[in-house]
Length: 266
Image (tube, rainbow, N blue to C red; front, side):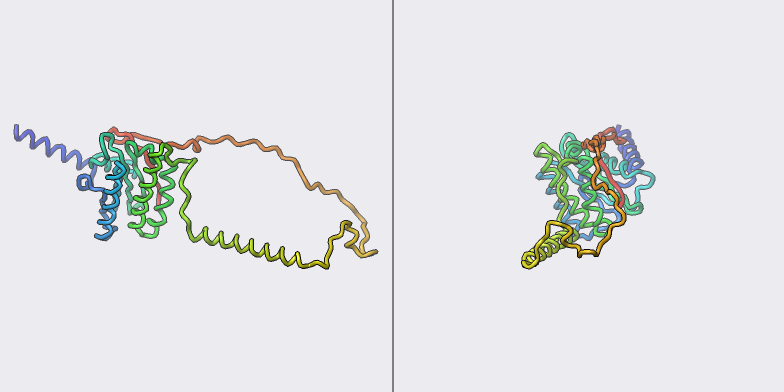
């Protein structure tokens, strides 16, 4: 009997090794195989992730890999989450961000209530927030930004109206926007100044007739032509495409669990 139990344990271990060649510590919210973060950065990030889980009742995981072999980012993210026991509560609520270094892929996989909280449009938005950091090699910045956005999205979902195509959060203020505002402000000031100068030209009065601006005998019309300055255009409202409907697309992982998700390149 004892030998049978040992054999069963070894067999299960081999199965999990085949399914998932890399495993994380049990319920550990951060896995950094390429060693992208310093020890202090890892400590700070783990604290952030564990705090989200404790306060929001949703597990948030970050995992970085050098390579994932023949797996797609979606498959690997789903399986890494499922087979390592991640998730809060009976429904395994939570999400995982994986980063794959050799292919420059990122992917977010959601499960349980996180599928509703993080819609397809929401995941795309989060991707826009973290990709600049990933591209610059600022991995701690990317993972911290991801954790911050997770808190914001979970709080919004708890209101009953998750972030989606119709209500995505406004993009953070950046230097490019500041330059545009400065340009508009400069043009406005210039327009006001020009208007004030125009008001000072009291000696100049507008004439009603165009002939008043033409010197007698200086113009002789030899040909004339009519120009149509306006046209009528009928426009029909374009119907909304299916891409505008929002929500979360789902699929089934190798474990049989339902997942949402999305990703891209950095």
